[in-house]
Image (cartoon, helix red, strand yellow):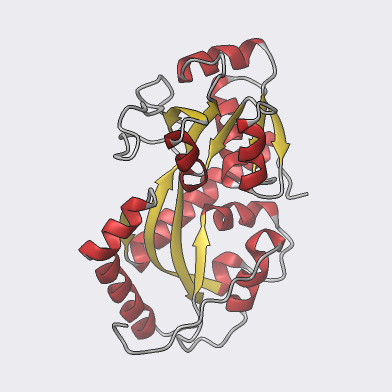
Length: 265
């Protein structure tokens, strides 16, 4: 709307988000193609070392837009009372932790929890977040380190119990849910963020224009309000700041993926 330019959103499912990323990486560097990315793309650098494109060299950051902290949820009738209880129980017996698939943010968050807590939860991957949440509600799973938008409605409906937010600060939608920092695990800070990238050879002038406009729009009251309603927190960063943030995320999850021996299969 700001530029009076038509935009087509093309969803490229499959391949752990690799298909869409490769398409944009190989497209003309004229500002005509952008790629929406999440934490999953930072993890993919380690999960797919033999990818047909180079994420860090073939694409360049444009802007970091927003994010939502991971929410630790258990069945509503779970005997696990709170996050400190989860830490203790996980050390005494094997718990089943569901996720939306191998190498996804819920899986990575669980692996980071295991590393910090010195425990060994059993990972149960699903084909997407919805079936995992369904089985958690049904009691077939013990816990999910969930994407906030996927579980918040069930928490509000009383079908799931939120025991911690993987954040340094509480969230307005669940003000009574303590953070992992408050619950004794300050190292478990995980946000599933979203940002935009563009072919690496795109001229600076085009990248800078996109970056400025995106930050301006994300900072508007209308967009911020709509984002908050879905559980997102607006955290706009320009291309240079986003580049530094993205490198730190790639390095962080590379360590966890290697440590936990996570594969995409």
